Length: 108
Image 1 (cartoon, rainbow, N blue to C red):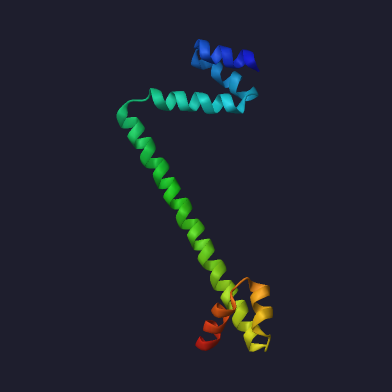
Image 2 (cartoon, rainbow, N blue to C red):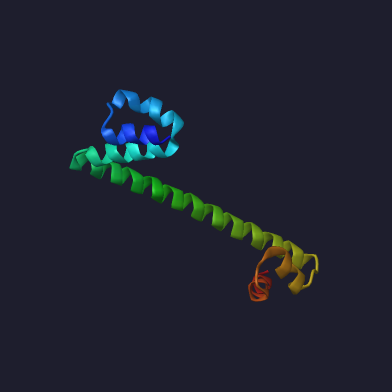
């Protein structure tokens, strides 16, 4: 383990990196970081832009999932209201507040 890190720090040629990284996942991360830092400014800017785009896409997906979950929860609460279930029980079952359920009840 330590020998692999020493080889990396010594500057072993890139052709040997694959063998080293198979045994050490963190060493792969260090090598990837070194490659990134070794790139020219334009390549780093392109990489940063790509990483930002991936992060933005992940945020949009997570936001959509959260919105869908909130809509589903509200739909379930509305059905429970229509069944005559009391507000406190609906709040406990859905995680919504009693005030949110009252607002939903006013809409329906």
